[in-house]
Image (cartoon, rainbow, N blue to C red):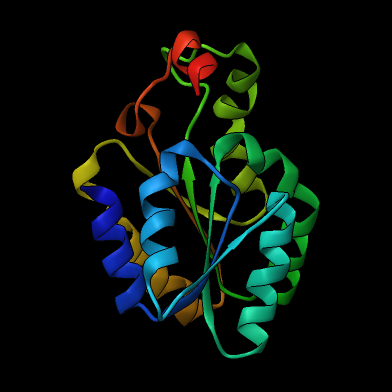
Length: 172
């Protein structure tokens, strides 16, 4: 399963702080990070807090990652300017919404714009279309972020994490 592989890459890459906005697509990865005694998983109320967490981790000599959904990317635009100016490492793993089959029309606009928004703010974007490529993209992005003091985002296609129906959403 991709969450297990990604957790192994994060652990091997020295990630100690994991900021996340609760998300069903990241559920298993969040649980693995919470159970890992070498990591501290921190629930965020907004995605913007994850940028501050990453900056603080970097200043304190620790590595971090931000887990979120594509709808949260729109919340990051202003604070991504800090990443660009200060040139600190930031890795974001983003589960996509708003792609074909999405039940919630409010997810579609940001889902369509996620990659362009991140790229406009200087973030290197890579997209995982299938489960088998996620961990290798994470490994490469971790290496480049911490080597170059840059920002990278791995976008995980909605079909990889699953497309919910309106009925499934109501029952949760």
